[in-house]
Image (tube, rainbow over all chains, first blue to last red; front, side, top):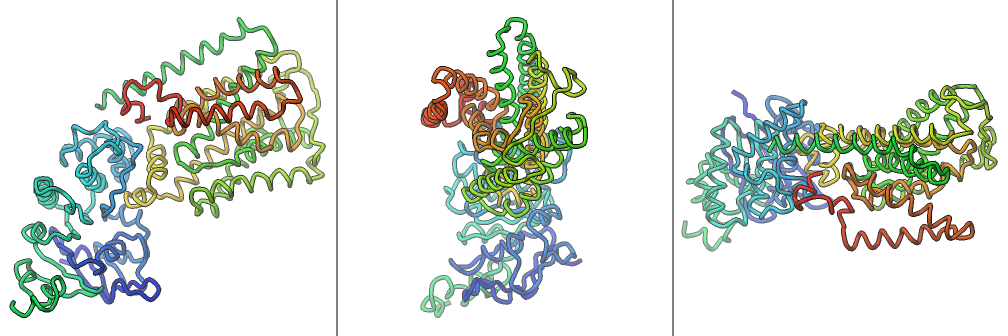
Length: 243
Length: 327
C-alpha cells in the first residue's frame, strides 16, 4: 500500500535562507509520526508546505496517491488534510460550536448536518460543555483543543498537529496525548510536530528528526532518542560522545 | 443547544415580522409629509446599511466606497428609462446586476489588499466613479438627469402626489435586506464570511476559499445597494453625480451598522433608526447653512458608542455577553 503522505526532495528557500533542503519523508496510513528537531530545524516550514500554505521552491508533495504540490490549502483540506496552528488561530468572535461548524461545512453542505457533525466532534474532543462560549473566552488549553476539533470536523485522513501539546500543564498534556490516541483509533493518520520529547516519544510510532532543514534520523522513538546524531543536535557534540 | 439556536432564529424572525407590520401601519398615524420623508430615508438607509453589513460586517472587508454601487443603481435605472424607455423595475434589476459584476471586477485585484489598504482602495475607486460620471456627457455629466414626469403609477414607479408608495417600497427593501442577511447568517456563506473576517489563514486551512467568499459577499452587497440607489433616484426624480454617488452615502451606509453593531443581524436597523432621524432633524433645526453640522453630531455619537459599547447598541439587548456575541 502506498504511503498516505510523501514529500519528495522538497526544498524551501526564503531568500538566502534554506529552511528545508531535500526533505523526503513518508507517512503511512494509520501511523502517528512525530516530527521533531531543535528550534529552527524547519519543522514548521515543512508543515506549511504539506498543508499548502505555500508551494515548495523545489520538489513535490504527494497525498493519497496524488501530486498535490500545486494545490492551495483549501483544496488540500477538501482532499483530507487537516491541520492546527502552532500559534492558535481561533475565530475569536464566533462561539466554539460555530468555529467547528466552519470545518464541518467542508463535507456537509446542509447546515443541520454540519451542526450535528460539529456537536459530535465537540463530544469527541471533550469541548461539548463549552459549545456556546465565545472562542475568545476559552483558556489556552481549550483553544488548542478547539484547533483540533475544528480540524477533525473537516473529516481529515491526515491530521497535522503543530505543537498542540507544547505549553500545557502536565495534566493537560496527558489529556492531549489521550486525545491524539483517540484520533488515531478513529482511523486518522497523525503527523505531529513537537518540542517536548518526553511527551511525544511514548506516543508516536515513528519519529523523524529534522536538523538544519534536513532529515537527520528516522526510526522507532526508542532508537531515535539514543542516536548520537540526535543527541548532538539537541545537546551539542560534547554530550553525544558518551552515548 | 440546538434547540436554543433554533429558538433564537425563530424569535428573530417573529420580531422582524412584528416590527415590519408595525412599520407598515405607521402611515395611518403619520400624516405629516416631512415626517414621512424621514421615515422613507430611515428605512432606505437601514436597507443600505444592512447590505453594506454583508460585505463589511460579516465578511470583514470594510468598504467606504459603496456610494459607487448606489450611484450605479441610480444611473442605470435612469439612463435606461430616459434613453430607452425601459421601466424602472427592469432598470433596478439591471443596475443591481451591473453593480454586482463591477463589485466582483474590482474585488479581483482589491481583495488581495488587507485592512486599511483595502479601505483606501474602496474610497479612491468610488471617487474615480464620481469623477467619471461628472464628465460623462451622454449621462448628463455634472448637470445630471431629470426624470420625466409620466403621472403616478406603480408601473413606472413614479409618484408625485404621495410619499406613501415610496414608503412601502423602502419598507419592503429593508425587509428583503434583513431577510437575506437572516437567511445567509445560518448558511455556508455566512459561516465562511465570519471565518474569513476573524482569521483568513485558519479559514483557508478548513477548506474555505477565502477569495471566493469575499467575491460572493461583494456581489450580494453591491446588488442590494444598487437596488437602493435605483429607488432613491425614483424618489428624488432628479439625479446628478454628487446627489447619488457622493462620499456621504458611503458613510451613511457604514455608520448605522457601526453604531448599531457591525456584523450583527439587528445592528444596521437599530443604528439607522437612531441615526437617520437624528441627522435629518439636526439638519432642519440648524438650517441649510449648517451643512456638515449633522456629521459632527454623529461623529461625536460614534466616538461615544465606540468607547462605551464597542460591540454597538445591540449589545445592550443581549442578556448575557456570550449569547449576544453569537450573532
